[in-house]
Amino acid sequence: MSNRTIPIDERLHGYLLAHSLRESEIKRRLRAVTASLEWSGMQIAPEQGQLMALLVELIGARRIIEIGTFTGYSALCMAEAMPADGTLICCDLNEEWTGIARGFWREAGVEERIDLRLAPALETLDALLAQGGEGQFDLAFIDADKTNYTRYFERCLTLVRPGGLILFDNTLWGGRVADPDARDEETRAIRALNERLLGDQRVTLSLVPIGDGLTLARKR
Ligand SMILES: C[S@@+](CC[C@H](N)C(=O)[O-])C[C@H]1O[C@@H](n2cnc3c(N)ncnc32)[C@H](O)[C@@H]1O
Image (tube, rainbow, N blue to C red; front, side):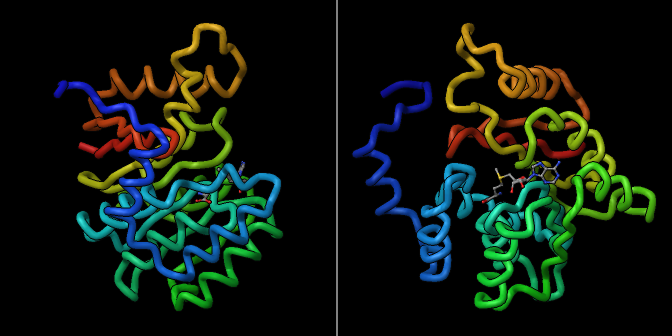
């Protein structure tokens, strides 16, 4: 017994999935289709998707922004957990990947809830702010280009209501955040975000070691 987070090896991870993952057949197929793509590693872990769905339910999120959609797995998890009249705005740049996403969203019956915006996410967020989006969102999930994470954070902090949640993916970045030899731009960007969040009293904070690290920041 210990008061630190348990290391998860393959066997224990298998157990965790076997004893907690409730994944629909559609989501399993979406993972299988995505696995054949060169950039499949960008998809979130299924147990993370399940946690995010639980968070959506917990805070009763009806209006969500996702930054970085890829083939739509995280969006599908969140959209299914929202009420039928909820709205999920998805930001991405890639038509091919989000084309796969659209097909699965349609099949899952959640396409109506999702508003996909194909444009640089900063432009989409600025447009939402200009249209009076301040405080209008319950949750934001940030999972796109790492070097823009702090810019996404500042915009999302304005767009999300007090008590709303901002989620950041990849905040452990394959362990490289803690590797002094890792000095590339993306690693430095994630480290800068983590430092900034630690000292930011505008949010309540937790970095959860699930997937590649998922940070939860609740707007105060
Ligand atoms: C890590 S993947 C997202 C994974 C997704 N959340 C999932 O569960 O499968 C990152 C996505 O961000 C998109 N992206 C990268 N830079 C972007 C930008 N500046 N604006 C909008 N989307 C961007 C990429 O096209 C890619 O699909």
